[in-house]
Length: 109
Image (cartoon, rainbow, N blue to C red):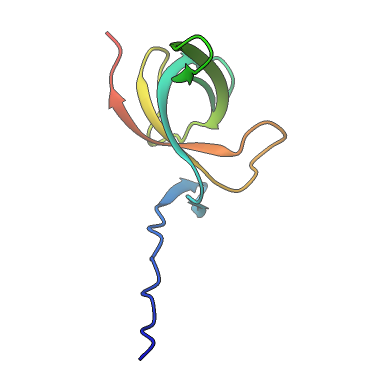
């Protein structure tokens, strides 16, 4: 009589980085965002800015919200300033980094 609901399987992407013969695994869990790299000055770190539009019902208009997220830049990906990238949430890497660059969507000129 009672049917069991099928569990939704979460698709978990895994990003692997090889450093000095060791493999470091970053399982992607949680949010996945797309944004533009605004700074790549720090070692193995990029700052990604994403822009979201939010509806404000009182004024019946939209507003733009920008947020900056620091992400771990893998040596194999090596994103540069101006690139469009996809970042995924992972375990805490440092005090400010809990995202990792998964792929480059568009290159800068």
